[in-house]
Image: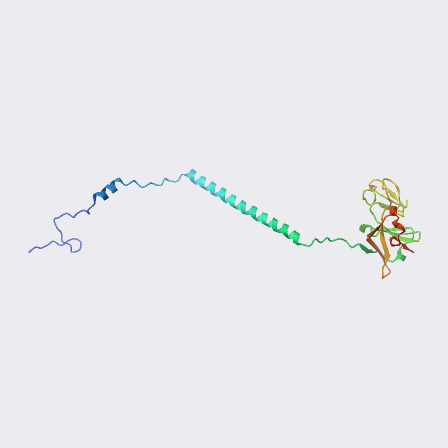
Length: 212
Ligand code: FES
C-alpha cells in the first residue's frame, strides 16, 4: 500500500517528477526575444515645462485679447446703429421771451435783464424795440455804457448808438433787432425767430417795434 506523504499545500500529492514549464512555441519565443523595447518616456526637463507654461500664457493672453477686442467692436457697432435709430432731438431754448409790460420801461433806458438771452430791451423816442447783443463785426458781446450812451464792443472797439446803429470801429452794420409784440396778457413778447436788419430796411417793419 502506498502511503503518499501529504502535500504541504492542500491535498496535492508530491511526486518525483519536476513540474513542466509552460510550453513556448518557437514563434512566440522568437517574438519575445526580438520585440522592440518599449520607448521610455523621457523625463520632462524644467526648461521644457517653462516653455510650455510660457506658450500657454501667451495663447491665453491672445485669446482673452481677441475676445476683448471683439466685445468692444460689437458694443461700438451696436451703439453706432442705435444712434441712427434715435430721433435727433435738439434742446434749444424757446425763441419767444416775455419781458414785462410796456409801461415798466423807462424812456431812454436800456434794460439788460435779458442780456443772457441775447436781448436788450429799449424804450426810446416813443418806441420799444429789442436789440440782439451780438456784435456785427465778429460776434462778441458789447457792453452798454450808460454815461457815454453807447454800446461798446470789448473785442475790437466797435461802438453803437442806443438805436443800435454803428458809428465807430470795424463793425460793418447796425446791431440786429428781434421781433416784438404785445401778448394777450399785455406783456411784451420778444420773438428771436424773427430778425430785422437796418441795412435791408427791416426796421420800418411794424413787427420790429412797439409804439408807445
Ligand atoms: S467783435 Fe465787436 S468789434 Fe470785433
